[in-house]
Amino acid sequence: MSKLLFFLPEQASSVAGPVDLFFFFMVAVSVFFSALIAVLLVFFAIRYHQSGAATAPAAGVVVGPEPEHAHAQGAMLLEIVWTVIPLGLVLVMFAWSTSLYFTLVRPPADAVAMYAVGKQWMWKFQHPEGQREINELHVPLGQAVKLTMSSEDVIHSFFVPAFRVKQDVVPGRYTQVWFRPTRVGRYHLFCAEYCGTQHSGMIGWVEVMKPEDYQAWLSGAAGGAPRQTLAQAGEQLFTERACVTCHPESGEGRGPSLGGLPGAAVTLEGGGTVVADDGYLRESILNPAAKIVAGFQPLMPTFQGQLSEEQLVQLLAYIKSLGVKPAAEAPAPPATKD
Image (cartoon, rainbow, N blue to C red; front, side, top):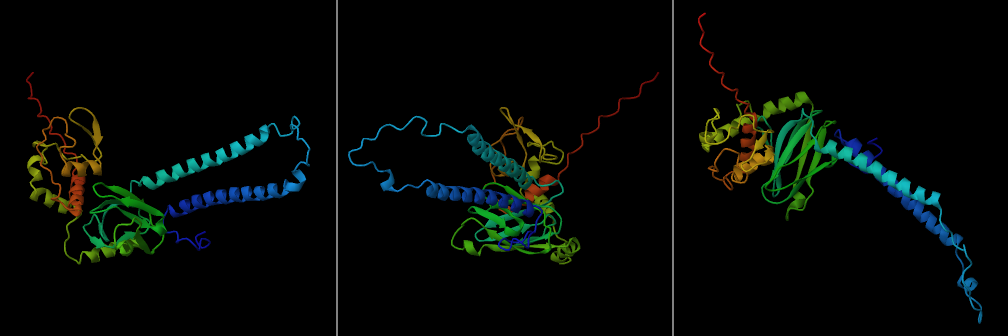
């Protein structure tokens, strides 16, 4: 099918085919009804055309009222047809697009988590193993990849035409996009949101590699030297910033325990709950007084302006790596004598 779509980029992801199919369905419906309306318009204009001389009354002739039933009084079948058919098509497009939307915004459970930061005028990527890239992203063939993205300055937009995915990258918050590459190759990456004078130069590449080649690339990117993973870099930063003082692994500090926090429901002071997603974790670091965990005092200082986007990503990776600390076992009761 991709060979027939010579005017579109090649299909190189699992969602490219379904997106193109829905696109052409909408185009076909639009072309059909546009052509139908145009043909009927021309037909009626010719079929019922009358010259002005044929319809003008003669001089001195008084034109009386039109006879009763001169115009059609209604055509129930016709009205039902031109109401039900468009309604049915609209409902089909709604259901189809909704299903496609949920496919695009819900990454699969096996997706590899990577991070992207947009800034004027480049893309910066971080792999969970610690490798960093600028304007180039290496990914394995057939493996779903989930990108968590943020911007250091203005709004950007991550767009890979061959994958049929596009997502805005907004400062001060996280957005996500996922894709599963289906073809080995090198594909253009663009910023699709005007972001300044050098916007047109904010171009990169996504290189899809066979799994064994990707693993070799990961090893080669490390240069044979031990490299910190994102979680390890986050742990080091966690210690350097004295976060461990209030959030020790024991969970007995002045701040809430971080073990098992990501994805959990957090009860807030004053009532209400919030899910500890990436956005909540980011906000809790930069603006800790925004949402206070029930049972704790707002003692944590803000780190706004003190951490880069890369450092925030590292801290999030470390927090996500923390498991739930098992509760201490209660001491066994003393043995009793009979």
